[in-house]
Length: 451
Image (cartoon, rainbow, N blue to C red):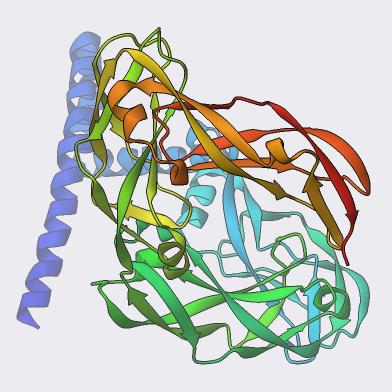
């Protein structure tokens, strides 16, 4: 109690010192100066002014004048002003179990209009939620005004918009199957692969207005890879995976989903396979042939989804030799095929060695027919045309090493029915560092019904 009393006394003394220093003393000095100017005639006036009670009365009069000026808005600090409170949340009250409301904005702006001091004070008080009270409303269309509380009665509050046109629908529900969607998958370690995702609930209830439910084409559990921690080979669980409803064009549909989230059990694997590098060339050399084409590595390890790993047999690498006429070393960035996420080697070098061009005829290559329609048979007209002679051009070392089993000859019978045709002979070979050409470019074939 003594401490409180001392504090009160101290406070009162501080107020007295404040008025004495900033009001009474300056006024005394002012009046003394006036008295000096007036001379002897001012004796009575001086006695009046030096009287402490007189100075208190004068100070009080000054205070009353100042208060009057403020109250009558004669000072700019209290001129009318306006402030806007942006993005005020809207609280909608209605029977959420039975109805769905459309047309209500999530946020509104509130403008405060009044004296500057009052507006400043109003901004310090948190504005209670702007409310749209739809209690007791039934399905239909309505224009409804917002409700709010004025924290400071001397300030005018204006909500923008002041009212909204809303529509109330009966709430209905349907059951939907949940599928999964993975986002930020590129942020997963490139050597890892999401093998499977199992949800703890693959059927959910979708609630909303009838016309909204008709728009729902699918419901997806959106698995965010960025939310996985300590990802490694094995099974990990991701909780509270959000569910989102989409229409047939991939747009979100505004409906309620019960439950709103699911838990996902995610199986992480790291399928891999060692495959050889297969070099192919494009372009035409300048009067030389490829003697050798040697990569710095012969095999690489690829990582990706299991289907892509099973399908890949080799990694193709294309070497552009167009216009080359002497030995050359290439630096080539390896390209990941579809479904492959990582390659153990990113860049390889390929050494190209060239030599003089030689040619060689390889005879007795059987001519096959491709793309023959079902129910038809084909035969070559003329015994001499049942096999092809192929001209192989390249460097001496490569050409001499080629065997007839490495070469294929064929005719393409796409779209051809019964009758005789002159068709082109096409040839290919396993070695892409040489060129192949048939000695006889065309043959005659006869197509007939098969027995």
